[in-house]
Amino acid sequence: MIANLDYIPLIQKGAAGGVATLGSDGKLPAAQKPAYTASEVGAVPTTRTVNGKALSADVTLTGDDIKTSASDETPISSSLANTALSTLGGVPVGNPNLLTWADAQQRSGCFTVNPEIVTEGVPAVSWYQGLLDVNPGGRRMIITESANQNATWVNITSSNQWTGWKQLAFAADLASKAETVTGVYTGDGAESRTINLGFKPKAVLVLYEGRVIWNYDVYGGLVFEGHPVKSGTYTALEVASNGFIVYHNGNGCNTNDSNTEYYYIAFK
Image 1 (spheres, rainbow, N blue to C red):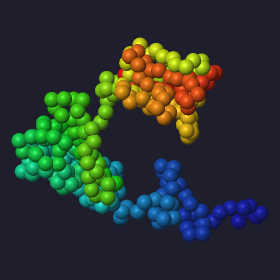
Image 2: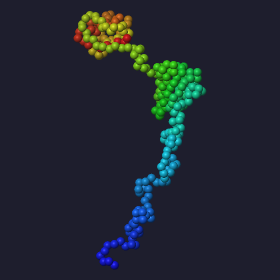
Image 3: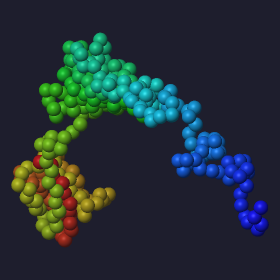
Image 4: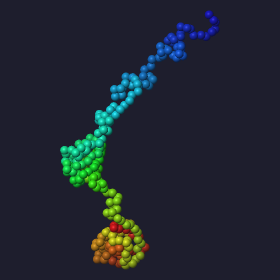
């Protein structure tokens, strides 16, 4: 025995409480590796599965493996395939009421309406192309007349009841229906004065400094042709052939007071 020499006894090699050894490949032999549980190393137990598929290898999920929602077991692939609603023979097939049909649908999608079949629950008897939106908060339908792309209607549900069809207005339509001109004029104190617009307005609204004044005297108002604003028997504001006429006198007509701004909007 060599005195005063530190060493590891051979009986401790690869033994419990001793030291680990390396194999011929330079790695720790399996027999000497500790046995850890999945929870100890933060791993997922191999007994777990995803849609019945073991986690022992890479898992591939398809649309058939994923359900539509927590409350709908339908595979997402089927839901996507059914997004477009049937248009065979017109929709709704065998049901003359569009709203009744829409109440029964479970998914959103596009549809067409055949006027020979559907005569109820529509704005008018016409061919329509539409979109039905079904969601937990309610339902919404938007339909457009096939022959008139600008005739678009919308209907929504509130407390599970349809609120009624409302036609959507387009900017081009509004412009053609009601062209307006706005402006400001400063009163000059003349007894009468014409504010020239270059056209005869259908109606004019005049406000004293942009305000509504409650007074016995007249400081503005809304006029139509043949329907002037008056202070008693005296005219205070009226439509003219090329604009509108304002007045200033001692009879309560104050639509042309000196150094006073009046705001107006005229409808052509």
